[in-house]
Length: 141
View (cartoon, rainbow, N blue to C red):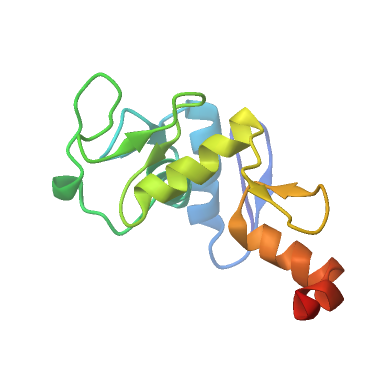
């Protein structure tokens, strides 16, 4: 037995048909009942809220108490915000993660290959480049 959406007629079958219809109805009602504890963002589904927290607020296991908001940006005093796109970095290595992230906006490539003109944003990527293309030169230098 299946159930149909009273708004658009989409049908749902299977064991979770009523639950799936309930989730589907949120599309039509626009209800966003899952509030982010760190900023004004709201989501229709808890899974979407969890994804938002991971991508926008960094370390997803922070508690709201360890990440107080300041009202203006929804960013706590210990969190860092990208000046270009307002992405928030919090938790372990937040300074380093923000610095690396900022390079994607500036296009800066501070790490120069000693063997050719290649430059890299991240030191790790420079090491990969050297191992892949300059293996022979690496051992003779």
